[in-house]
Length: 342
Ligand code: KG4
Ligand code: ZN
Image (cartoon, rainbow, N blue to C red; front, side):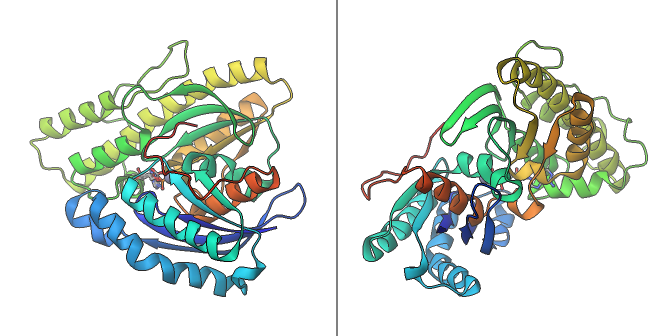
């Protein structure tokens, strides 16, 4: 089966085609992503109206490019999927309307994909991970631990009670004068640190019996350190503070994942894989910490390649394909959902 996937829920306009090969991993036939970073950078964050207009301007061309790069025409496809939420609603509507129009003229099935399900199932596209698996979903808008039992079957073990972890990266980077987008810039800054333990930062939620997260206190602590330094940071200060931030985030994620592993092992003794997904999963420091955690717990650790961690069309095409295989298609009256928990 071959499915086209469209992603427009935030600041990446993306289209991709994936194909399945039996039960194992799938194949990415094309994966085109246009980042709108330059459009939003002057504002220090994503401006919804600008994002929606940019999706509208570019999506047509990107869909054409995805088909061309895969060497396919519309008639070669088996279905068309689009992110239908959660996300910035103007952008989501652009993607959904485009996919619906194409499904209507071709008579192909339409799949309304939950963006989070796209992230959640990516490790099946890339590594053929089998159910059940434990998922750490860490992105700009979400921070969750989920037991993934099957397509559409997610048990939430923990979530953030305030900011998402990507949000903490972005906001802290802004406070430190690093710019936007925060995650990759914080990671780059941290790599130049000479004294990573220099700044004392709290490890949110450490030792709590549940699997929840909290990151707003960490951001406030970063702000305090910046104020103590007089508001302007030298590059060396930024490097050390970014490294201390990574340490605190890593400690918190490891503590929370350790709790989740305990619940997951008790509930699903046959499960043996921890998957990390979402934009923050691109972070090498955090990947190394999770790799180490899994080694200690004799779990397999799976992280998709970097380009499939941040938002892309292939993850939406794959989630659509998995749904299509199960007959889970949607009507053309499906309404986009700005909020849509898994
Ligand atoms: O999954 P994603 O592309 O979009 C959402 O669904 O939110 O995630 C974007 C988030 C942003 O907060 C960005 O700063 C963060 O992922 N991110 C990173 C890295 N690359 C992207 N955070 C930490 N380290 C990175 N290398
Ligand atoms: Zn995402």
